[in-house]
Image (cartoon, rainbow, N blue to C red):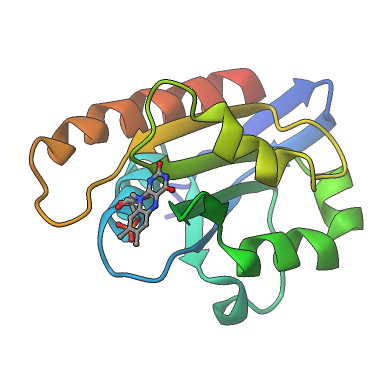
Length: 160
Ligand SMILES: Cc1cc2nc3c(=O)[nH]c(=O)nc-3n(C[C@H](O)[C@H](O)[C@H](O)COP(=O)(O)O)c2cc1C
């Protein structure tokens, strides 16, 4: 039985059926960003959407309805592979809805980091968010999970 939920998106992105979500991320460690991606993936899936998540080099056919792009921050810089991905997929990212996130320690003005990604996009993302990562100890990093869940609901409601 096909239990997949089809969501009709009639928004400024045009009418489309959003079923497949691609989370493209880049980070150097298997820590906060990888965990955030796992939470986002689980949240989309629990809403009935199909999700593929991977680093740019792990993704082949980019046959998706929504792109979620994320990067960690080290030394004030976002990850080069995510900028490269944007550079190489300008047409696709013009056509499809895009949401972006950044994982960093800066919580007061995270837009400084996020803008390094947004300025490379061919259009404004539908929404962006920052997650507070960690350097060594996870501390209360787990609190970021509800932020991820809420953000996914917001994305889905914008597309519905
Ligand atoms: C070497 C290093 C440099 C960092 N530089 C910054 C920075 O410039 N600005 C910031 O907000 N966070 C900075 N951070 C915090 C990271 O963004 C945070 O540790 C995040 O969780 C990294 O993602 P990851 O856990 O997926 O590696 C830095 C962390 C490390 C380890």
